[in-house]
Image (cartoon, rainbow, N blue to C red; front, side):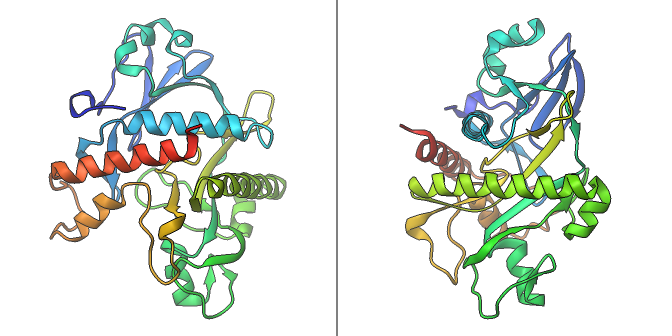
Length: 297
């Protein structure tokens, strides 16, 4: 799904207004709609690297498209098309660059919160639990181990930060930001999405440990799932056969990169070190594997 020479790090579409560049995505105004181009950029510890991961943008786009379709009965989403033929003329002129990594989407009013859902005790949740016996203020039984399955699914929202780490917040703070009714609806839908996706992933030998989602409202004020959904960049997937409570299982994402970085003397400040070829290649293979395991008939 991509070779080293095909890596796309930045885009420029003459004839479309450029709206902004995130860590991975480039955003363009397509008149009535938006164009989201998912590049092969890689970020780790909030730093964007000079090297990309071959095929990464295509994997993220294909997985989002897969999950949007599968979850449509739970909540509408913003995706209109991933077919380059449906894109505006300026994008069609760059078909070879944009094909497979571009989404034409509805314009939505975005809720300024991240909807984080957890099924297992890992990451910042594990750190929080060790310090307080709770995750984001939600108390848990004593004696849980790293990577234990949680007694019940947890909804732990966070703020959306333009730079740096998002901040975990409690439900009351979320309600003060988006309104109580919206907060309750977002929590209910997020948990349904997570539990539906978890059940499907488990049927493919994959554990969905946690995920984060974004929502907005469309022109008709319908709640709408936006951005990406259940990709390796927004979710923690583990191979079921390698899960063992008490240790962090290998994940289908850029964990290979993070592990290598932790073995170096890099202080996690720009500029980042150059990534070895084998780290790039193994990471690309990990992204391809989760796509195949979740979507292959």
